[in-house]
Length: 138
Image (cartoon, rainbow, N blue to C red):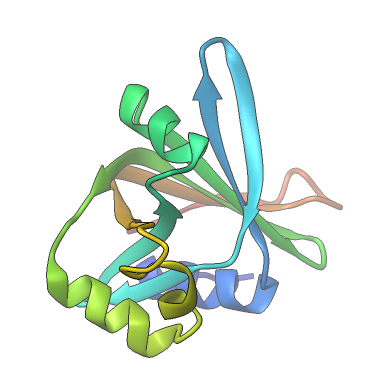
């Protein structure tokens, strides 16, 4: 499988539907399923509630890994999570995912952290033939 650039990673994550975000909680890895990802101005963004443990874990240790699979294809995307509070990002996220307004609003008091990965790397692996793997150029 050929995945080109950040756009290819975004398309793969969309096809997979659910992907997994791994963080560190002290010396214990924590993984959770996610689905929010958004390509905006050539950058791939993800979202997590600021009230959740995942957000606190990313602040304490910003090194994270995202992993998704579809068929026998696995994509890993990892780097340093950096939160971006640009209001334009929130507006784009609301347009792309209208359900976010039901969760993150003044009534609930919940806030969404939108983050991207810096110093990121990505790789594709075939889980049937593990010798088939390659780094995805970002």
